[in-house]
Length: 241
Image (tube, rainbow, N blue to C red; front, side):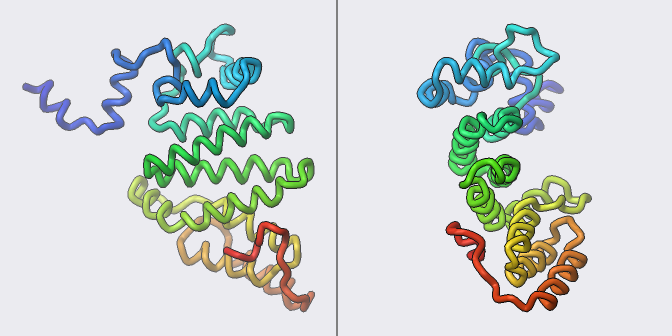
């Protein structure tokens, strides 16, 4: 009876963890197979790309021949497909030539998070997109637009993400919101001080972490000094938040 009482109290996440430890989760298909991503994996990447990405995902704590994505069990328990794919993309963020691969992975992560109504998954997918494209904004001509587009998506989702984070961590303040921070910085760099100020005010009103009063003060000072008309940053429509 005690065992049954314990089982009844387990959350879905708890059951996922137990299934990974004690059975049912097959090692033969790896992390991707568990989330039903094998077909996408094979159809989206060449054999050479898959081998390369498998090696990039492998950590130093794993055996040299380990294949946690497609065959073995990884060292981390991923609760969602988006969570897994975000980590895969992060491992592909260090080299410029890997940006296309990382972008494909993040596009799939966005698709799965949307299909599964995973608000926080989407929030962190966009966070990783911003990081990826911002890193290579001086290397690829489209990177700046892509980074801002991801900022735009994350900002649109911000109220729902804030609610989800407060429910998950009721005693902790909200973290810094990369979308607001990066977008306001890009606007500032292009002399678009007024929309940058509006973004900072919006982030502050929603309770996101960061020294928003100071940023607003600095932007107001620059706006007064320049007196220039506000302009759009690029063809992506960076003022349209």
